[in-house]
Length: 490
Image (cartoon, rainbow, N blue to C red):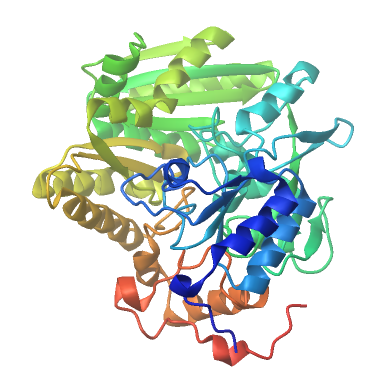
């Protein structure tokens, strides 16, 4: 049976020497002041310094690092650009942090078969930049797409503005090269229809608990012939929510369908000076239509009719690239703008059915008043993915605990409405206590069975996703490794 070495008895010197043999001295970071850079991800309220940071460039180097961790029974955590918002890349105590920033090469582009192969450190927006000149694009586009990495997108199954029509990351991953937690290397997928178990689909969204992807084959799409963005403003956020439902019921599937409330509008205009958002609107709706020119024109007419029927005050149509970019710029900068207007913010990532938008928003606003915090509401309205941003000051004693409780209440509200505790940010360290609000004991135990096959020693991103007795008061869901001590990995 696996017994982890106690961290306080570990001699790090020979481990560092072996890592330097694999990576060279400039591939290993161990000075305390340098390690501080890596002590948190995009959710900075939680911090933990790793023991060592390593910067591999190849699959083989990643494999050797993980083999060393396996032999020495050292926990390890993978990290991309560090933009995650659930604590998924948060180091654990005395771990090795494997940072993929130097694995940033585009390995091949195949336009005939509409696919591109990249390393995990490639930035999301680089993919579209690499293929746009040939008339292609990569659809998943998180708000942080100019800085987040494909590896992190894979780990969290990230979405973005265009996930309503085109799907989240998992719908665009054709294959993976994965280093498993024992250091062995496997290839999954590669073509759209593969026999056997869908190991690619299993790995996407597994948050680094099943291994580390070192090569990723992505699907690229032809750029639509015509694109139009419609901005509709409303004096009532419930009317904006009703408009979303009516558009989908009319058989129109926009490429993007987003809502920003009044506080979000004003924060963005204050910081970014976009100049096109009406600051007195209770809510604005951004609707992107794409496709054949005649299709876009017909849908524009239908969308305008639906917006007006639901009480829209004004409609703005953006057909040229510069104006479209300007309209989307504010929406994608909302989190950053909130960070400039408040000492700290805490963002959640729940999902609800579209038909529940109006009542759930009322409840979120009620909770904000009850707890005494302002909440900025921005969300992927088309698929019900909410992003309530709670503004607070972490320097005030007790504020973080209250905000965590408020965030938890919002997640429970989403589950009660028939939704989920995460749409694209993942579970990580932040939401694992709420997994039992969404899943049964048997559900969670089954997930643990799967993790145990790939990660029997629990060294790959330990203490993430699932509730533990230390943090959640859960004992029945704790996985018993001894049940599987005789299992072989494959």
